[in-house]
Amino acid sequence: MPIDVFMPALSPTMEKGTLAQWLVKEGDPITSGDVIAEIETDKATMEVESIDEGRMGKILIAAGAEDVPVGTKIAVILEEGEDDAALETASSGSTVSDTPDRAAPKSTEATAQPTPDTPAPKSPKSPSEKPASDGRVKASPLAKRIAEQKGIDLASVSGSGPGGRIVKRDVVDVSPQAAAEPSQSTAAETPADAKPVSSIYPPPADIPFEEVKLSGMRKVIARRMTESKSTVPHFYLTIDVALDGLLKARKELNALLADDGIKLSVNDFIIKASALALKKVPNANVQFAGDKMYRFARQDISVAVAVPGGLVTPVIRDAGAKGLAAISSEMKELAQKARDGALMPEDYQGGTFSLSNLGMFGIREFGAVINPPQGAILAVGAGEKRAIVVDDAVAVQTMMSCTLAVDHRALDGAIGAEWLAAFKGFLETPARMML
Image (cartoon, rainbow, N blue to C red; front, side, top):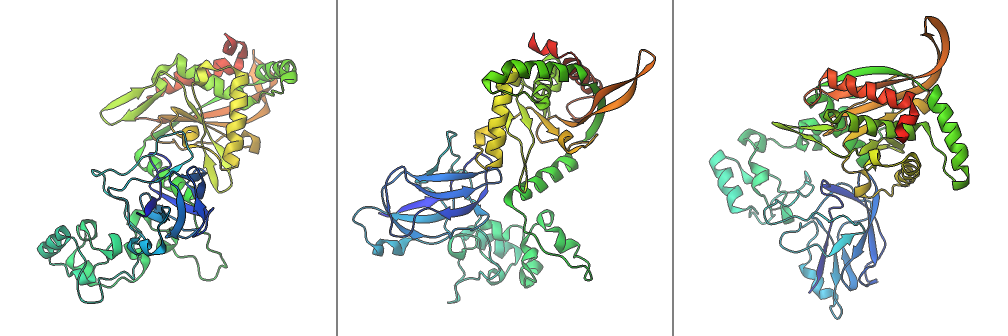
């Protein structure tokens, strides 16, 4: 019988993806292990392998389709000996229910699959979807009962179920008045918090402009940063760090490591110092969780990396237990994978603390937005020569301003200050990081 291929979940949190391209055409033979498609998430582009053998019978979702919900049927594979007549039962846009996903992403992480206890993801709803033209209303019994109780005319409701079927979610939040009014635009079907700004604040008519569609990454950044600033009570602490001792130590270490092809950056020292400060002040390595907190025994540092269209935060795992050379090599590899769009979910998920360094752009000081659900993020500015007072005399030293953004639900000012003091101590006396 035909084998259904569904949009896979490439990470436990993935809800939608972009079907970047098909690597096979209808009629092409397929063997187990063949890469048949590429899926874009907000973080990376990943390949999807076929577990089955046969030939590609029908492609249901075209290449380039965006925001395809996890569990949506995207193709049908015909087994050996089956002809195209078997495709008549294939329906575009249906979602996975009891049928297992027969294609898997090329990832070492287990793929999250819908279960009978988990509602299937909503299929994209089109304003033009209407009940069957023969006068019958395609609706589930529960949807019919809710509509009857609320006095809703099902003929005016668009269905999001398979084949345009009206299901519970289509009527549960609908008022009789709203159902009776025709939709004026697609924005009417968009939740208020998801509306594009242009639908709320139209651009001035006298200024030329172009409309730039948001990428999946930018949509996620917008959602998560709005969530962070709306729900997390931030406070900020800034400290100045003298870098002359670190720069001298870096120069000496790089001379020793030159034959090994390793070149330490100032950021490598910052990652190490952050991890050691978390180890020294464990109450700063926490996450708020409602009526409790999680205090982590390992220091996993998320490092912001700028990529076209946004940024990603690959994670240096257990940074407190790694040497500077190991951190440097791992960070270079992760940064390159980020720029190539090749990060795997295990490369960027998790993390107990974040770093954002804009010093290379000449930014002296800034405040970063916390990356939920983490409890803090350090914003690192540029190292620059400043006139400061040392032993009652003016001296010139290389200074760097660092600002810690803290979730006040999990950390108080004293804990944040204690962490910054430890961080400053490790950077100003880098030999302590070798102990």
